[in-house]
Structures are given as structure tokens and as C-alpha cells.
Image (cartoon, rainbow, N blue to C red; front, side, top):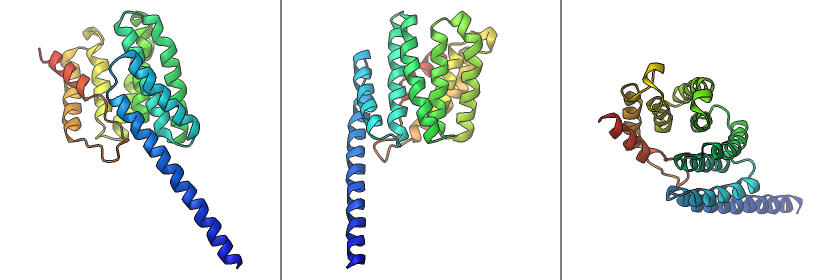
Length: 216
């Protein structure tokens, strides 16, 4: 009788765990689908809010924190493109908070390290003349680590190439120096498949845009 009770309790716990996991995956797939189609600031804010809610409910999962950080970076990109450089800072601060949690959950993950490199790039946008000297090398070094951790991660090459593309040529940047990284990213993007519905795949569109610009 005692063994039967223990078995039933174990079965119930496992059933609850599987149900929670299914709920998490369903919520994440919905949020990932939303961020995949996001184009505007409001889109990224809405997707970011979804990932934040999932992260608050699933504190041991790194992907919600990672995607929340991505949404904040893309929000910073949007306001930067509209000329509001100071407005990038709060978004990047939020991105850093989330990626710090992700790094604690899964150290030495190439995707997480790549996002850290992207955040460092974003810090430059506030004031390129002042911030570039500090955050340019930090971003480059972190992205080198991301490539070392996973040489098949296209986002690491894309973000690295993007940073080089927008760095003045007399500091080692420019289109010609960026092209090898953008070309490698394109090659890897073309091979990439998302089989689980959750894995990061962002960056291909903008990588192709930069590569086209670099080839002009």
C-alpha cells in the first residue's frame, strides 16, 4: 500500500511538471512568433512584455530572459534610428538586467554572449565619440568569445560585422573589414533551421542588408 501511494504521488508530480512544461512551451512559441514579426517599437514592447511575464513565471528558464533582452535592444535600435539617442539608455539597462540573469542560468552560451555583445554595441549609440572607445573593444571581445563558443552561430558573426561596418575605417572598421563576418553570417543563416520553435533565428534580414551595402 505504501509503495502504491508513493508511486501515485510520483506520477502526480510528474504529470504536473509535464503540464507546466507544455504551458511554458506554448507561451514561448506564441511570444517567439510575435517577436519574429515585430517591426515597430510598439511591436517589440508588446513582445518584450510577453517574455517578461514568462520569465517571472519560469525563473529557471534562460530563453525568456534572453528574448526579453533582445526586445529591449531592438527597441533601442528603433529610438536610435529616430534620432533619440538618449532614449536608448533605459532600454539597454533593461536588456542588461535580463541578460545578467540569463548568464547566471547558462554561463558560456554563445547566444547569450552574443546578446551581451549587442548590448555593448548599443551603449555606443548614446554618444559614439565618447562611448565608442570604451564599448567598441568590449563588444568586439565578447563577440569573439561567442564565436569561439559556437563557430556555427550566425548571430555572433552578424553582430560582429555590424559593429565593424559602423566603426570608422581609421579605427579598423568600415565595409571592407566587415564583409568577411557578414558573408560568414549569411552562409550560416542559410543553413540554420529552427526545429523546436523556440531557438533564436533573428538577424538574417539585417545581415543581408548590411552585406548589400558593403558590396556597393
